[in-house]
Amino acid sequence: MTMLQNKIDFAVVLRVKRANPNGDPLNGNRPRTDYDNYGEMTDVCNKRKIRDRLLERWVAAGKKEDDGNEIFVQSDDRKADKCKSLRARAEAGLGNKLGSDETVDLACKKWLDVRAFGQLFALKGGKKVKKGEENEGEGDTGVSIGIRGPVTVQSAFSVAPIDIASTQITKSVSGEDTKDGKRSSDTMGTKHRVENGVYVFFGSMNPQLAKKTGFSDADAEAIKQVLPRLFENDESSARPAGSMEILKVIWWKHNCKAGQHSSAKVHRSLTVKPDGNIELALLNELTPEVIDGF
Image (cartoon, rainbow, N blue to C red; front, side, top):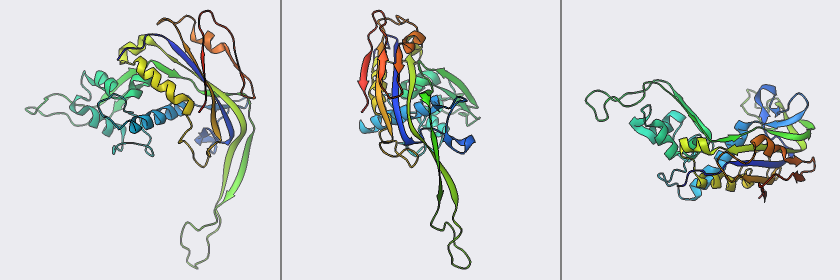
């Protein structure tokens, strides 16, 4: 595969309508906001959705274990293997090479999200191959290896302050048996949602760092293909089908590794209006590709 040859910047514009795009567990699972009441979706949340769509893509292609498109950080409710932890997945994928000098190279070749976003392998001490056995001296007795990825994804912020609606809910079915056979008292709860908001987040792909992980033009194309479908198969009680929508993906491909303009200047060239419409300022010799959401 050809290593990433050109710097790439991208932006994703999305609409939230009567949904909770990213709840804050430290604030009663209310939609995240900053101090000025602008809505927020963390970079971790955004990368989770990218990983999920890439995993679905790999499964649809036949789950070929040697194609380098597997996903290392899989959520428990969507995992495509039987591994119950990152350690188990690392051991299954790397075997006795986990913790050796080959860990970085092998991990980058096997897992697409490691090549793209990087990964910190921070694992407690485990078994090491005993003296006299095959691959003597290899294995992990505690692993702490950091891989820096070429793809960075920012948090998403709404382009205007958002309104959050809260609804009290009750449970009409008993969760436990009662001594007198009567229905137990209803449990009160609260659901929160963003009434209507347009968010935008930015990202970038760095060819210099791509060379270290083996991130290729094909990998960049894979991410480009899943961005317009970021919320497909992501429905839940907090995010009903149709409540989360990708409006536009803007893709800037520079003509060199260093980039014709800084990422900050490229990102500033995009103006997103509260109704979801966008305006793009002209940049010298850099023409963006505008892709409609799915």
